[in-house]
Image (cartoon, rainbow, N blue to C red; front, side, top):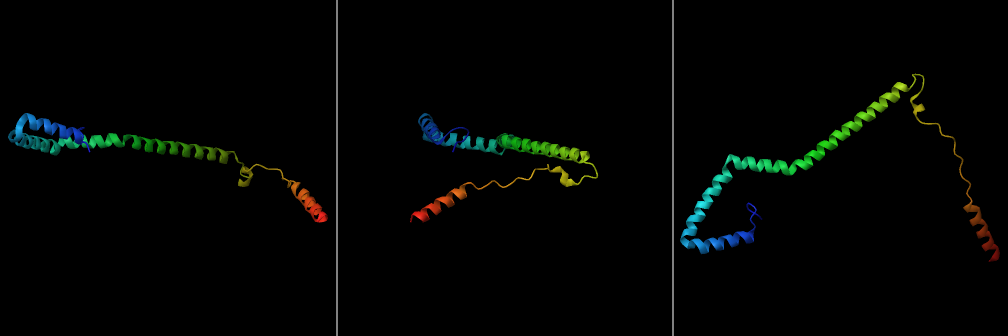
Length: 129
């Protein structure tokens, strides 16, 4: 946990130095003054604005990526609808919608060349047994 960029070990070091320099009695007064000063800062409108701006800056990359993805999806959707519209305009009214699929020649089933070989091998094994 860091407070204003100061970690726990650094904070302990600062307190020890302050205790040595100020002494125990002046340390209480300095702590009280420092606490009041920090409370004023933390409750000020400027600090709240700083925190809000900091959150916005931290979430900015994610928000930009989401907006870019949405814009890209809208562009793709527009391209697809334009392509579909142009295809529909090019169709003649007498042509059925199934004419969009290309005519494919009938494909004959390939001959099974492995099965006869296996069958002959099995017959040879039966004859040898």
